[in-house]
Image 1 (cartoon, rainbow, N blue to C red):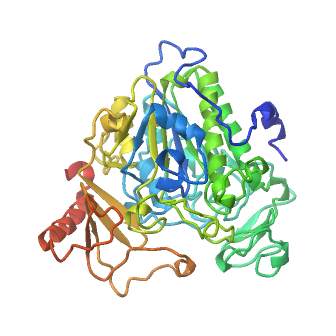
Image 2 (image 1 turned 45 degrees about the horizontal axis):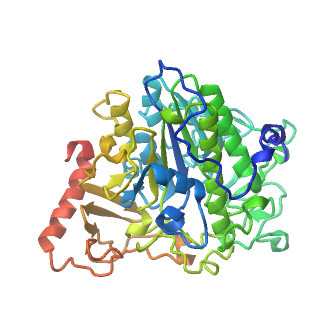
Image 3 (image 1 turned 180 degrees about the horizontal axis):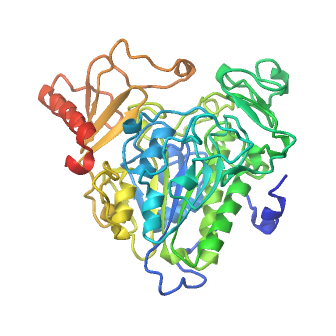
Length: 522
């Protein structure tokens, strides 16, 4: 290990693989200051985790004991959604309270400029106004800088310019260069005499690539993921330099969890907001050695076990620091599941009877329910009800709901798609949304209670070439689709011809929501 060796040595005794790290966590070891009335907020935001990928939702072949503990005390949702079936627009929506299409949010390359610009109202900036200390740890993938980042200088704007006081990031994703950590504005461990250069349109430097040196790979990759090799894995994009700053994928769970521990320890005397954004279970899936073989599904299943351990590690620290009873925890995923996403890690071959999306059709990239219907568990000791909720929930509503909770008023043009549904988040009501938009690559879906409408896609609508090699059921048709999820949860029977008036009404509603926003269209 490089820079992290000392930071994790304090906790080496608790690196215990898949076992549960906390039980009875509603009782704190000590009390947070009595003067603190506002709850801490921790959002665990997992990457590519499907509805059926956790044991509280029926996972087969993998156990998630720490999520079992959360679900046994909190609210486990059966109809909660990310706003989109891909990560960048979902992350944008959660942090801004508005749909990604308003900013043309799409999956960003590793050198993309900051998508959320300084001055934009955000969830962390709103909570800052309410007296919160704010931090983000983990995958970012919302762009950095102004479009031509020099990784050898201060990298900004980024999280620190939009409301976060502390940030420790994977700049983009685990499968994209630069394969370095960014703390605040600076690359960690970067040496001046070994500067970083990154390109997404031509090769730089002399590092081997997956195309030219497949014999060096630990895992075969598709052509898109076959450029610069780092840690035996070929990535998207070309990178030279920064040898001392390179990450080791297998160290992610320890690096990120201990950064979260440090943030909690530093921030415990004031209300804090921690956005813990996982790289797991996104590709490349390279779980730490102690998690290998802990599922029956190979690296993808083992990465789920690893993710669950990290949740337990952070939850344990909340208890240790005496703040667990005053912490609102939200666990969810940025989009639905995907098996083959660029690397040959036997995810499909070793699936067995496990259903990553549960009973739902589709997954990541898709407009079907499996694309955005994701796991969500909410727990706040003494405030949330232990229940299985079927409320229709969107992650975009986290913004307005937390604003209402901390009594922070929203400006007219702030978080325009976000609704205050805190009673539903806490399991005190099943009344949440009537309408919910589902963004996918190339089209939109709209829920109205149990009705699901999918826009027709035109013949000339171009889709990214990289989708062509993926076993994805997208849900695109040249004519409108309408499903009654009451008795057709897997979206098999198109009823658009039976209900033309409803189809027209749903299309008109989409237009209204796009033009006015949800806050002004209910």
